[in-house]
Length: 256
Ligand SMILES: [Zn+2]
Image (tube, rainbow, N blue to C red; front, side):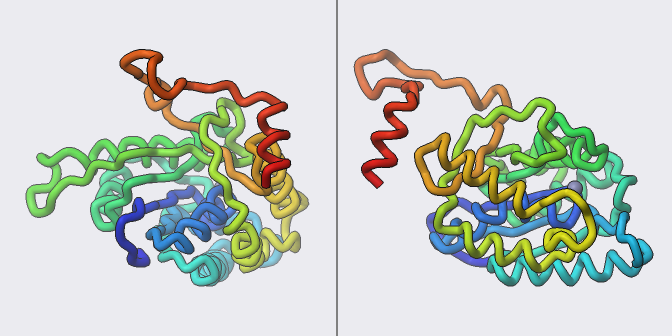
């Protein structure tokens, strides 16, 4: 993981190489520019579906593309050997990811939202959720200290929209251009393999979430239901859960 001090450590875990980058690459770029630390963990290369290459050949390419994208963003990259389309939320992989959480010591983990139609994405959500739990259990790690992850954010992904709720908006305006450069490291995102317009979709989404939050570009994230609770001792201080109205966004946009 790239080094930094005083700023939360960020870890992005995706099912396939490329998922983490489309979901949170602009957040990573901006976070690293702010002297934060960030690392990607891809659970599979995402090696199936190339029209000309075998899975083994495409896995080699995807690994190279993932490293190139990580280099553009300035983030470390780890890629596991599980098979695309066959990812299972087994105890083995949960404990392996927990060990990687102990290695990286992230304060914040970003991963897939639960409501996905892609089986690997749904498995990744479960794996990461339980790995975070296991990483914090001291009894499991007799030779190293446990690690408590402070926050987990679920990303907005076109395949994971069944239960996605935009709870948290992160202004990514400063990381936007570096993010687009990183996406172009992947043949898939350059539009040469699939009919799905990845870059146009995710750039449009950044515009939409930016407009909703009064910024140029933004990423929205869902949070666990228990993280949505806001507890206050009374209403004498800062007003909690203030409403964002169209008028307030227009006022902020005119200020910018
Ligand atoms: Zn994927």
